[in-house]
Image 1 (cartoon, one colour):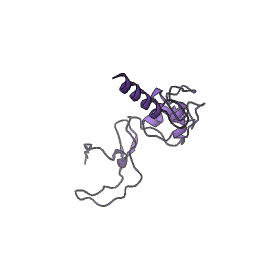
Image 2 (spheres, one colour; image 1 turned 60 degrees about the vertical axis):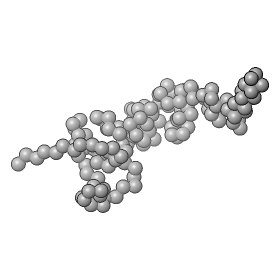
Image 3 (cartoon, rainbow, N blue to C red; image 1 turned 120 degrees about the vertical axis):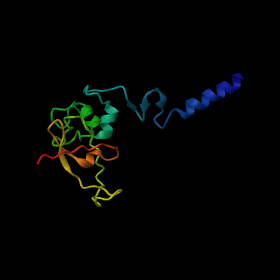
Length: 139
């Protein structure tokens, strides 16, 4: 029984380390420590490397919103013109949609509407989820 346990432990140690020799199960992968957040914006330096943001600056694009908040709301933390929706809607437009009609199963055009926060939102940013659209008109 002890021999089997020793063999299992040896195999785990060999399989849990990668080319750099670090034990990835301890929170490190390819030399990147997920616990380090140099700029204190809530994104680890490893995540910032993946996003292309500056790990030394909490708001890479300088728009007044931290890189973490922008990545959470699907805003581009590298583009100051791209901002989160005020009501917190996610930006889900995959960029590959095209209008195909108004029949069941078709893709509706990318309507621009004003939400309850007074902000213009794009219909395609709600892609991938079911939503109820309640519209009224006064004549």
